[in-house]
Every structure is written in C-alpha cells, then in structure tokens.
Length: 362
Image (cartoon, rainbow, N blue to C red; front, side, top):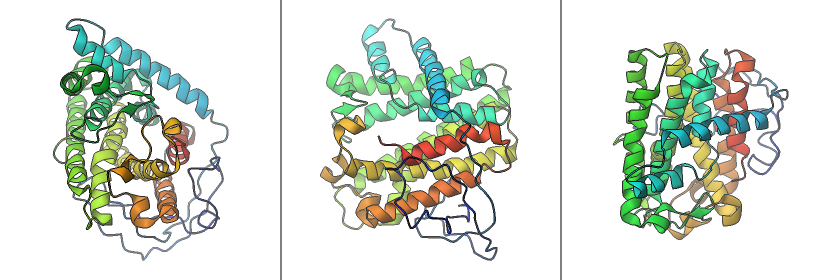
C-alpha cells in the first residue's frame, strides 16, 4: 500500500520543482490529517502502489538536515568498491568474445545507483559493505543485462548507452543477446556463491526477491506492456504506472530489499525499506521521462528524445512537464518519510541518494 503522505506545505509546490535546481537540503513540516483513506492501487505488482493523483499530508514529521554528510565522497568510494568487485567477478577468459561483451557493458561506467542503494540499505540495518557487495554486483549485472537487451533493434533500437556505442553495435545482435543472458545467469550464481557471513535462509530469500523483480511479474512484464503500448492512443496513467513500476522500479526495490536482507534487517525494517524503494523506483522513472525531453544526448550519455520518436507514453506526455515535476516532489517526500525511525547518521546515505535521484541531471 502506498504511503498516505505527500507534500502539502512548504514552498515545494509554489517554486520550481526538482531536477534543475541545487538540492535544497531544508527542513519540511508535514501536517496531520488522520482520516484520509489510502489511495487506490494502480499496479498488479504486489510490492508497489503509488498514485500520480495529488494527495494531502497525514502526520507531523520533520525531514532531518543532511548537510554534514559528504555525499560526493560516499558515492565515489562506494562506486569504486563496486567497480573493483565487478571487474574481479567477471574476468576476461575463454570464450573471450562473450566475456569481452559482458565486460564491455558492465564496466562502461554508469552511476551505480542500484548497487550503492543495496550497500546503503545493508549498512542501515547493521551490515557492512563487504556483506552487501555480492548482492550489489548481482543487481548491477541484471541491470546491465536489461540495458543490453533494451537497446536491441527488436526492443528500443538504440545506438548509444553510457556515452558509448551500445553492445550490439560493437559485438553484433547475436553476441549482445548472449552477453545479456550470461550476465543474468551469473548474477544469481554470484549472489549464491560469493555471499559470506549470511545465513543460507537469508541468501535464498534474497535470490527469491531478485528473481521476482525481473520475471513475468516484474521487469519483463513492464517491458512487454511497454512494447505493446508504443503508438497506442488509449494509454492512460494506470498503464503508464504499470510499465514503470515493473520495468524500472521493481529492480530498484530489489536492490534495497536485498541489502536489508543480507544485512540482517528485521522483517519490519525490510518492509519499511521496501516502501521507501517503491517511491524512489517510480521517482527515478518520472525524472527519466522529464530528462528525456529536456536534455541533450550529450548531457544524458544516451539518445535523448527517443521516447517521443518511438511514440511512447510518458509522464510529461500525459501530465505535462510541470505536473510531472509535482508528482516527482510527492514521491520524493514519501520516500524520505519511510526513513524516519532509523539511526539518522546511518540513514544519511539513503536520504542523500533520494535527493540525487530527484535532482540528477542525467
């Protein structure tokens, strides 16, 4: 069920929305309204339900300041750790062609948001980054697989990814498909074999979460409905939300939940972080939709405006840019609410990552 919270007061709705401003690490106050019913569920995916309909605020809380947290240093350190682990996990060996193709896309850079979310969630519930690294790498391997396959001519037919030619442009469509398949398979092998200091039951639980997020009820479901919706004139908010909840948000949610599971989090902590991840997962895609129509290919590192060319439905197309930004603000605030009750210093990375997702420029 979606959080009943949304932004009401502060200047957040009367000033320019996120995405093109320096993140305002300010304190916001939420006002009580305990009688408000929960919003209707828009998606069949059991782990996410967020509505683009404006909502009112239900309780009084304050978003803590995180100005003392050095987000840049944290991101650089964690990304370096993840990159080293990915490089070591998939060495260049025979057959050389497939491993070159796997490494080409896996080590092509990127923000590493998903693995860092996994690590931050693990640390929040008392684990450490060493415990989370196999799960974090598994998530990034699967994310990379999804990008390779998404770029194929039979899917989105894209030529640019992370500022470089897409995998099939370098290695051919046949090898690109196989590279994605190999990354998908190895992700589960790596999670199962490389995770240390975690009970077998928790490892199995993590594997189940990851599988659920990418199969016929997760990422694949979103991709299928996305393909079926191209050029359709009857696509509304409900279907758009289904696409993004499954195609984008589900794997982001899995990243956070896996971190909480292997970090030893309680069921209550895991579910609270799941709700947090639901919001940032959809927030990520709303921001992506806005950037696609407001930024250049050079700024994004991928082809800009491709959704418009493919006649895909997006939040700006259905709501307009301003309403899309307001929806992003709502998701931003709802995500942050779920972090209350955790140790503030340990929660600082997730607060900062949430701001980063909302205010990123590419």
